[in-house]
Length: 295
Image 1 (spheres, rainbow, N blue to C red):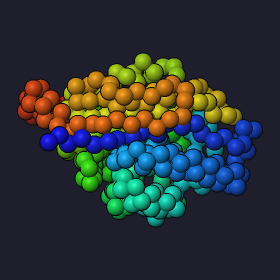
Image 2: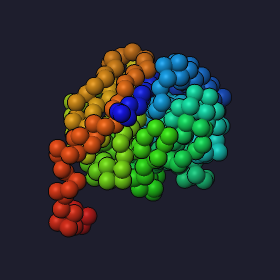
Image 3: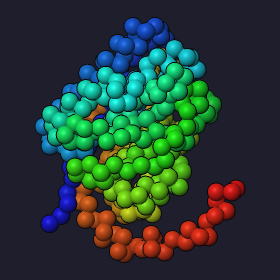
Image 4: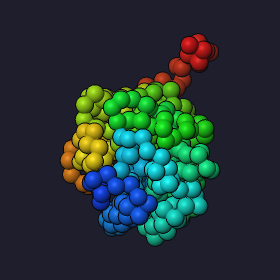
């Protein structure tokens, strides 16, 4: 009997309540609440469609504030799992018997902040978190080292009710090493929540992650937000969220510019079929790769 898991991705626009750039604490809380409320409605829709695993976009409850360098955004970070947003998501996960991957700005301690994603199982229990390992600092508009420490948890996999999953976040997707580590760790589906704009890297969006899927024989769910975000207007977040199978074929694709929930049935038995054909894990030669960690 096939192991079919119904998975979903949510791509949305940020609710920019202060287009003039106001960054007072009340404005920031209104933005977070508006985005949380919007996602609660999408999660309800996912529940109605019997989605079993759902992933939200990078820092889902805020704008991509890394377009500027202002320490006021530090105050929007929350603890994982003890912050209010994760508690709400735990209740929703339990209500809909749904695994939810929740990417937020994480506060571990004063001045110790990460770009993270919490993984909540279908009974509402907190399974753990992934912290983004590769942190860009690129002009114009991607000043992430100002906000995030590099992740220190490695590349964990999470044994959920429905599948073993891994998480990669946005810029991580440019690095095949972590993608391979997730495969070797047993990930059947890897989710990559992102915030990426049209331009330099767009041609890689449908190239790199299908390549990771094919090289490692797992499914990938790639998520990107949509629209532009004032006052920064660094470019158009071009959506195009998708699922691809272990052969690297895109099997479900969202639009470039519309808010939507994309849902796909993933047959996990395809993983065995592909790996029995392409024996990439068998034929690895890790004893010859030592130089990669020294260069």
